[in-house]
Length: 133
Picture 1 (cartoon, rainbow, N blue to C red):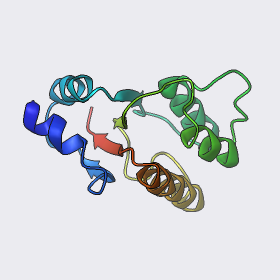
Picture 2 (picture 1 turned 180 degrees about the vertical axis):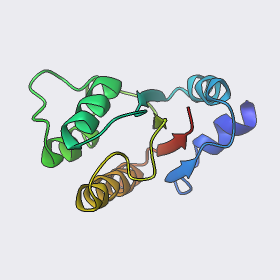
Picture 3 (picture 1 turned 90 degrees about the vertical axis):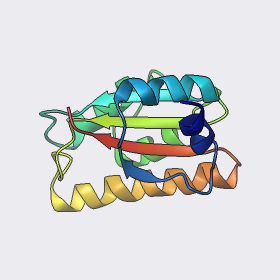
């Protein structure tokens, strides 16, 4: 756990990965590192609005979240309501397409990648893990 927590603190390595440990191990390492964990169950999610709603619920976006791509990018790059030394977004049960059209999938993945870069520039790691089940 300590090793994983130390790895999470490496903001240069932060990015999108397939989870190669249990969700429980990740939760424990996130807590040990003092990071915030946002956990979204995407099993069966289909369509942009359902994905946005699942991410908003997982991250506890403030009331008034606009439920569009721009609002998602803004919210992920704010997180002022959840101050932490770093952030981990765990996406469980996501299909290869994230339940989206090809165009929407590309937009969503671009937003996630841009979020990682945004937080890296602010000296905080932002990790995204994809997990089955």
